[in-house]
Image (tube, rainbow, N blue to C red; front, side, top):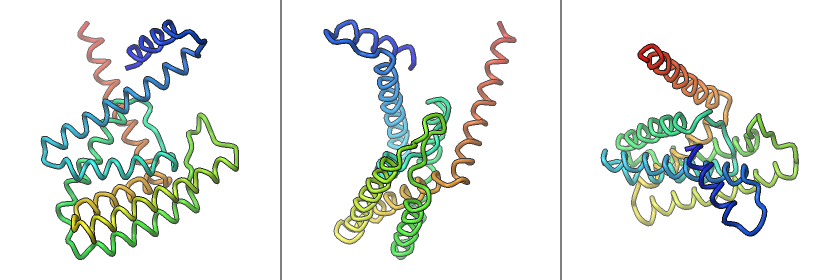
Length: 212
C-alpha cells in the first residue's frame, strides 16, 4: 500500500504545474487507499455471510462518529482491517438475537453513553499528533454532537417510520462500539489486538527467515 501510494504521489507531482509536497500527497493517498480496501473487504465478506445491511449501518455509524470524536489507531492498516472485520461482523451477527422490545433500552443506553463520551472524552487524539488548540477541541465536540444527533434521528426514523429494527439497532450498536473505543478500556482492548497481530506477524517473519 505504501509503495503504491508513493508511486501515485510521485506521478501526480510530476504531472502538476504547481509545486506540491509529495510526502503529504503520499500520506493522503495511502490513507484513502487503505480505507477503500478496508471497506470493500469488510462489506464483501459481510455480503457473503448474509450480514451486508447490518454491517453497512454498523460501519457507517461508527465511522461518521469517529470522524470527529477521534480514537485509537492500529499501527498498520492490515491490523486495523482484521480488527474491524472481526468486530463489525461479530456485532452484525449479534443483532439477530436482539428482541424488538429492547429498542428503548438500547436507544437510551447509547444516548447516555455518547453524551458522557462527548463531555469527558471527545476528542481522543493521536498521541503522536496531539490537539493542543482548545478551540479546535471544542469544535470537534460540537461536530461530534451534531453527528450523533443525526445518527439518533436516523435510528428513530428506521424504527418508527420504516419499522426496520435491524437498521436502527445497527446504528445504535455502532454508536456504542465507537463510544467504547474512546474509553481507556476500549483503547487498551484495541491496542491488545494490535499487539497480538504484531506478535503473529513476527512469528511468520521468523519462520520465513528460517525457511530461506
